[in-house]
Image (cartoon, rainbow, N blue to C red; front, side, top):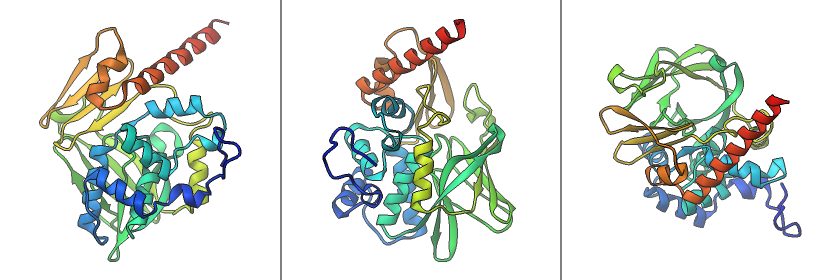
Length: 307
């Protein structure tokens, strides 16, 4: 890793960039409003709920980061930086950086947590999604904070049968399909399905092959490269502590879950950043920059198509 802004400064090692010290851990727990406890299944569930209700799933900061940082290896916000930005600016990320940050938190708290790279075959994708496995008192759980609408609580990786977790908005089920694979599905009652999308079916296949830190970090870097996902549009899901949810989908759709059912609003023409910033609780200048960058990418693609 290099530091393009301070080329003569000491470059942090991967260890320093990914492991939270005592002060950083205290700051993260304060931000999440969760006290420190010994590892347990109930504590893991509270941490996961706190993460999902305080850190958004969002692409805006990724779009800006990719534009602002020239060196590919420096684009990822590794856990120490990720948490600094989440606390200071209210940003989040997509799966690779979010689960990286969550792993660092669990590791600092003494959990036996492992990083995994998983497949999304329904999208033709191999190694397109991150997740964690966490072992507590001999039981292994899937713990994933990297999806906008999924897994607000850890779910057991059972050797047989189906395990489920859910909220008022949606549910998840998981079942083993091979010696080292489980299929995670999304389920929603018809009246609670998100407008404009199917809410039944496969989310991804969890692959039980833990990655070491170097190997996982390489995937995080690759996700900012030419084949990375979510670098060409602004998408945001903000889950609130009271169970309400706000989702922005391009070009102009705002979805809201009020605790009982979803509603959909098409935003009128205007300053999109100003329209959605209060709803998603993210900095308006960052959102505006992301929308401007996406507009530039779309204009360049249109011009190239005319040649």
